[in-house]
Image 1 (spheres, rainbow over the protein chains, first blue to last red):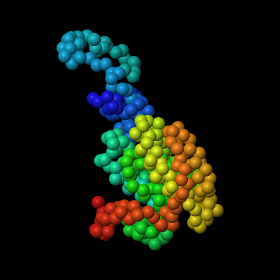
Image 2: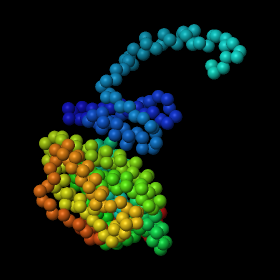
Image 3: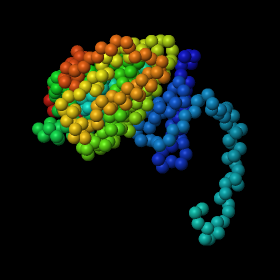
Image 4: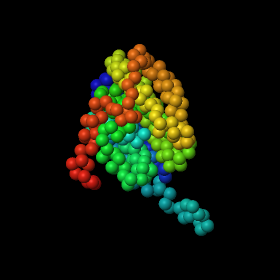
Length: 95
Length: 239
């Protein structure tokens, strides 16, 4: 990336029905204010949302895909971590 | 008002695919579509009042140059991005207080159109004012370019506020707010943003007017040739 290029931003939108902001894509902008305006124009023009978050991409730290085996595979054999072995007593609703 | 929206909307549509960055390309074409939408609503209503059976397409595509009453400002060519932004800013700063006042129009249909358009215009103004400040108070190059745009466009800004018999009558009937009052609000906003942008209003106080009377600059004819081509070449075509 050239030094003169604008930084990259990740855009998160909360839809009308949604409870949380979801990642929808990225864009370039000179600062946070411009990033929100650009996100409004690029990602909400078809009524996708009612709230926008933007985050400079460089501030996101990600797990290493090379380490996926050691990070996630061990969880596969631990079915007892799912709360599926409990009997729910009659009369308990909203479970 | 319909002509202002249509012509400026068409000008902005010329940016489609040519914006300086993808995000701004989409922003400009969004604004273009907002303006053409406003023009549609206003033309529909104008056609109804006229009562000669002309619909919005006939009013938009099948009049001659002198029948267009848009201000000289909106027909000026796009120039560079700074020029487009300055033209947009000078226009948005006029449209914002105008639509605000028109929500209280004695004409219910005009008030309803203003209500809907006001939301769009608030964003247009925010977008263009923000860019005027960024470019004016930006780099040496951006400052010098947008100052040049202001020097060129300033002479057309007063054409937005030209009054005539129809305007006077609309003011007397409470359909329109006082155009002088709108000009006062426009000046206040424009001066404050230009100051933040470190831009200077040109010394040359010469004003060019005539758009509202159908006396246009040479640029409108070329614009209309492109805008009207399809309807002229293939009358009544739809797509």
